[in-house]
Image (cartoon, rainbow, N blue to C red; front, side, top):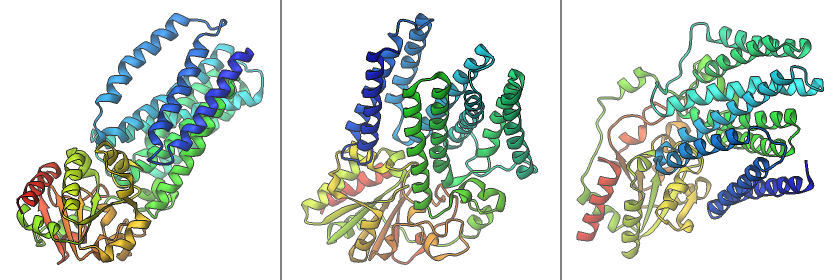
Length: 460
């Protein structure tokens, strides 16, 4: 590798590090993303431009095909579908790294060192789990299959047997330098990825996406060792480390240990609620109101909190929401947005959504800063959120989401809950806040309901 190439790879590595730093704050996230993309572009151009590179037309053709598919997909994807797009792209990355390492092993049949052979086996196992596991998370989030936990007969035994078989075949493949054993190891690992994710359901799915993202990073780093490519090692390690930290933070934000997320369904502690629980509360009465009554409540309040959730993203109502907030502020009402760390489907989902509507960052309050404000808030408006405001997470010891930190909107003087229907949230459990005497429900599509509120406030 020439000095120029090594220098370019160093610049790329620095870009990736600066990108992660930029992505740590909504204020700098856009620039961080651009810096990361710039670094990746440098790496691709320098790699394709190397003299010793073979099959250059095929590689360039593959890049063109990938760009033709990815650019429209990324530009046209709805905000609500970002998590499943991330899951799909992440799975493709893990699968690609796995295939590259396997190709190197099959082509050379015996690598220069035992360490490189171990790296290939590791890549085969972890990359395969990331690939098929990400496909299952995509299917769950895209509602191509049920989002509830799925347990195959004898799930614990079958999953353990397949996992041990994959690891055993990987060890044997390294010891015997056997391509057939490595192929069997890969096949078992692909099955393990499916079995690994099927029992995960409800609000735990985004956490698993983050974990699988860390798996992909480790796979890329291991394939970089096989290919003797320092940049892949650095990039993969960054993704693996940041993905692991993000997974831990998400689990902490939900008040659940990682083991509970991954293996909760085996012990019956998954976040998905039972049908019996939902049926038991189906006939309970609630209080609802129309746009005119709620507009009066908002217009003459001193302090209002907006709590955005997945329903706001589904309706693409962020611009209408800001219009309402601007209108209330023009009347002297103090308004802030209360953001839960896992509102929506991924961390930062609400921050990005509101940034699209140019909501001032100063109006956003993260959970720890927002909770002390609710006791002095006249009206808390919940727009499409559910699980992140469910008091059961704080008060009901037997609830599947007990221990998950929530936004304490029930401490506000009044709560306006905007929902399309009485269906439960992503965790699949009922929300006692809906039946609280201080709660008023405003049924309808979030964008349509917010538009009605804007018109009603203007008419006052």
